[in-house]
Image 1 (cartoon, rainbow, N blue to C red):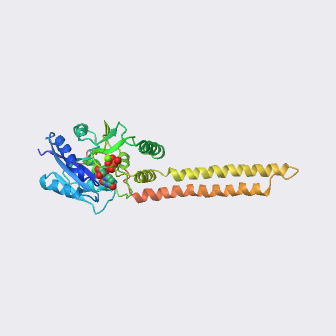
Image 2: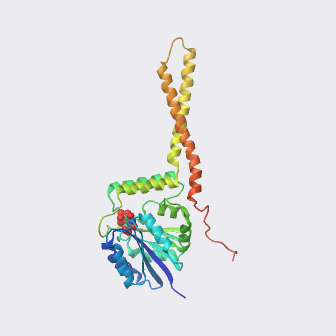
Image 3: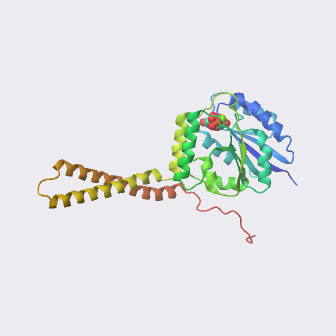
Length: 314
Ligand code: UDP
Ligand code: MG
């Protein structure tokens, strides 16, 4: 029986100093796992340094190393997608890993073990806090909002370091949406999933290329592609303003009707009426959210459901 093939997908952006140490660290683990056949697929995400040359050198020396060179920097999420789509049919599972050794290869045996015991997604969660307090705070806020606002249950502190069964990967390849947040999509998919903990070490060489701006953009994209809550909130606010100003106006008119002298200045009526009109606008935006929601679900063309398995169909 041929050995099962597992492919490790590694997005790399300006990681020339890390490629070789990463390769060595991974090999020291995979060489021990002789029950499997290994592939190491690097996706060069438009690096401006020698990353691609390093990858090519490795590929020349070692036939299990493969490389995909993107024409420019597209960002990690897209680099991962490119990697997933470049996978050859005979791969039974993939492992997504960063090139900077923040995802310790020593975890691979455990990921495999969980996979062999029947889990189709083995995700990892980092236990130690290794990022700046600002990023940590942002990350917490993000997960909190994501859980609050969308109907997918995103576990906090999970990373992109994951093992995915072939079946999960094949479904992922059918996704056509352009704005993508890999982890979110995977969590949306369901399947049998488990977690493995690890404490993330410092980045090996160089600095994290993710600027706060990129991360905020990713967070906003993720939130808006899984939830219309921000727009709906506007709608609720509109309804609140509408009802409160209407009540106030009715109150003003009634009290004035039974009063002997003028109770309110014309300006007061104007202000209340104007606020009422604001309420109309906000409520209308909320209505738009409902329509946009329909358009959104149509255009992202996400599969309606994913079949876990079938019996008796042959
Ligand atoms: N990366 C990428 N494209 C980018 C930015 C990053 O492929 O535009 C890769 C990078 O080479 C690394 C992984 O994504 O393998 C994680 O990047 P980084 O370590 O900078 O992020 P952090 O660990 O701070 O989340
Ligand atoms: Mg990193």
